Amino acid sequence: MITVKINVLRLDHRQKRDARITTHVCLTARAFGADKGILSGEEDTKLMENVRDVVKRWGGKFKVDYQKNYENLIDEWKNNGGEVVHLTMYGSQVQGVINEIRNSPKDKLVVVGGARVPTKVYKQADWNVSITTQPHSEVSSLAVFLHMLFEGKELDKEFEDGEMKVVPTAEGKRVIIKDDPDKG
Image (cartoon, rainbow, N blue to C red):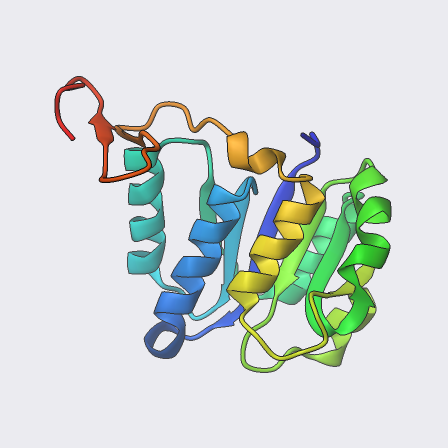
């Protein structure tokens, strides 16, 4: 698995309208191997607490933070030597650029859009990456991109220090609860 830092920036979160989709962006980022989710737009402490609770219960080191002004964040990221990958249906096809992105030794900030992505984000990005050229969800774009970036190895990722763990079974549900292996 690649060893660079992967942070995911969710642009222009709107607390009342976007809570569910932004939560899913964060959960997808965590489950598919990213290190951190960063929200911009409206601050949503309840959403961030919910994501932190998932990390506590299910394990891992995923972090979630808030930054009101994403422009400063992108500038700082690039000034510190990181690269920006903007997921959009208007970019280069992922299958044509994923090896270049994966082979770069620099930390990545993966940007997923909000209501309307400003032109400046397209210009600041090192890669504008298309996950199909059709309208669909930023959650699905993020999942496909991270899956291709990690070459599927994220599917075997172990999440340490969680209170709960699913045991895969062909039928039924089995969850091991820490300190009580008989539950589930």
